[in-house]
Length: 272
Image (cartoon, rainbow, N blue to C red; front, side, top):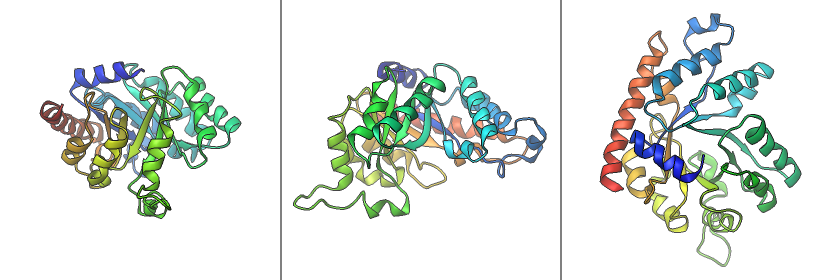
């Protein structure tokens, strides 16, 4: 999916919602455990309930890898079930030496046909560029995360400069790819720093996790992060998919997604 197609979906649905499919056998409704593939049955119900309100789905690959071959099968079935007009994100946080990154890229872009994959930039250009060689596929580079340890490196001020490391990542990575190939992860709980981010990447899309269960403010993210093409994919995982653990889990997930979509429609009208 290219940049214009993604923006067209945002306008059509009046939404920039990404639903995180972080599916955990220990958290899904117990009655699903009797099914042959409980993870897929859960994901299928969530997709059916939320597809009208979101423009992206983001399976966190770790939840599937942890189940071995069965998990990969569930992931592939889930990916095949997602409607073709919805953007797909492999939240895999890959990034290795060049030839290994090339194999990771083939796995997610050729074999599984995801639209995008999250990549860690720590090893530099040659670990990222193999992912950028695929037409209409996206690299979502980790830039400014909201986890407790993010300050260990991301917020460090570079010697001889007032620039923080995450700002250097934003600037340097633009030498590797265009704004129709690169997105950046910016945590919602860092909303106060979105203005700094936007100064460095005014035209790129940002994937913003942390709205909902993690406490991020959708209004602040929208105000400080939106650009002329919206430029935001705001993710909610637990706040949607685990809003209920009973038989009505899909219905409740759909309602939560609808509530976020309606709030997003208001901000699109206000800020865009």
